[in-house]
Image (cartoon, rainbow, N blue to C red; front, top):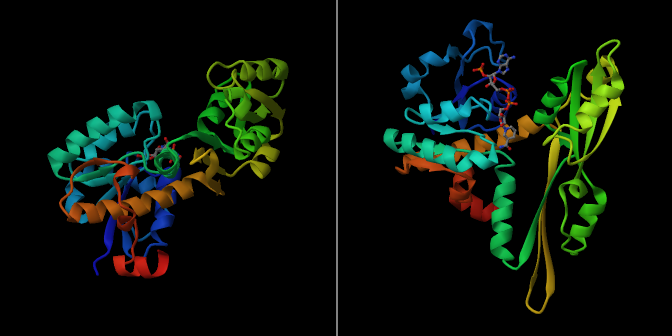
Length: 327
Ligand code: NDP
């Protein structure tokens, strides 16, 4: 059978993760990279795959079945997703939860205009966690949702630390509070405040002679990012940061607790323990790229989320094989 031809637009953590994930999916092939930078300067791990500037993307539209958009959610995807959904089936990982309705509407209009399928907000949260929340709500309507994140690196919080004067480098871990998790798992249905659910651990490399007490105070009192949490700050050397904190692990738990019948307790728990957040996110994206391809072949158009896909579309197996091996 013909392979699904994938384009990667944007070569950061996710772009690299998608490049690796495609190698584990024999029904797909990586057709091209697209970047806003000078193509010749991009060092990919696929020397045989051409690299183009994004301005040449539209001219390659007949060579790409699904374009995976790997830009950032803050400023790249709000522009890129509606733009490229006119010309390609796309998948993005837009994760600004509050702006998903607006992003969906923008992408939907262009995808319908161009006659393409456009998946938005694919990954783990939003993504696989969202799916678990939806399923949990349907199965246990009389219940309560809990999502815990971590232990894992928050890119946004790490960036916020690095912007403080006197900070050379830093990493932030989001950590679920064990006692809160225990209460939820015990079916106590606790009401948990922000502070009771997660703590924040910061590993900071300070510039020489910097005022450590001031840096620690600025981190702990930073509104939105740290002020509402119990935050610990550890000052370490650059060597220690590079040695012990170079990975991008993440994960978490989606729990639905509820009751059925005469107050019978029921619990659903879905957990992820990810050695690499971007490599996992990319693996989810690639499965949804397959769904985008199959749905486009059936003439479906418009913006879609993980809620809109029947699981059979994600699989490279035939429906018959799926029933035989996995049902
Ligand atoms: P990066 O910052 O690594 O990459 C974003 C873009 O920046 C790239 O597409 C690339 O575009 C450009 N870029 C990357 N590296 C460089 C560089 N060295 N110099 C100049 N430009 C560079 O972001 P991530 O790949 O880590 O994440 C992308 C988005 O994915 C995040 O914003 C996040 O919102 C989302 N995400 C969603 C998840 C989910 O569960 N839904 C989970 C994880 C992430 P170009 O090649 O065009 O220059």
